[in-house]
Image 1 (tube, helix red, strand yellow):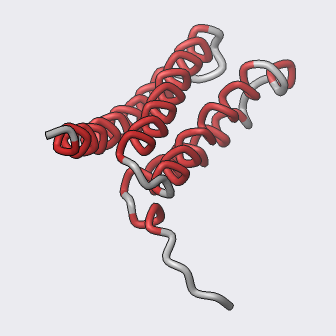
Image 2 (image 1 turned 30 degrees about the vertical axis):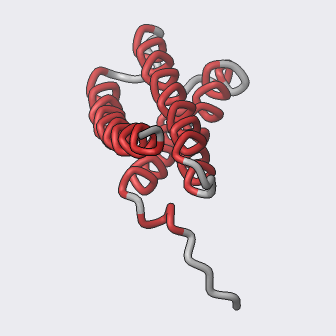
Image 3 (image 1 turned 180 degrees about the vertical axis):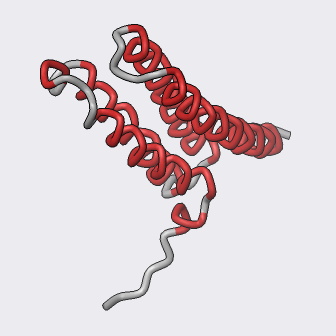
Length: 128
């Protein structure tokens, strides 16, 4: 077996976003069957996008490219929050489930924001 260091695996934001994937998938499992290819599918695609874009961004050489992938992850995070609110409004999840997911989303948001700030500083440093 070839050993390779996938640096994104060490990032707390990546690990937490993978946990969010698992948690959202479990929530979707409780949705009515009519939502299998509608709201549930939207949630699946959006939540998978977060760790995927974090991982892809770490493979990019420039801070500008890395920042771009974090922006995509952030957009997907907001999409999930919106879809969870709709799920709550439709009675698919309860308030406790919504709040638990929101807490995870806020933590991921803060981590992404911190990473973006660091990358912004690097990008500004390159222009001096």
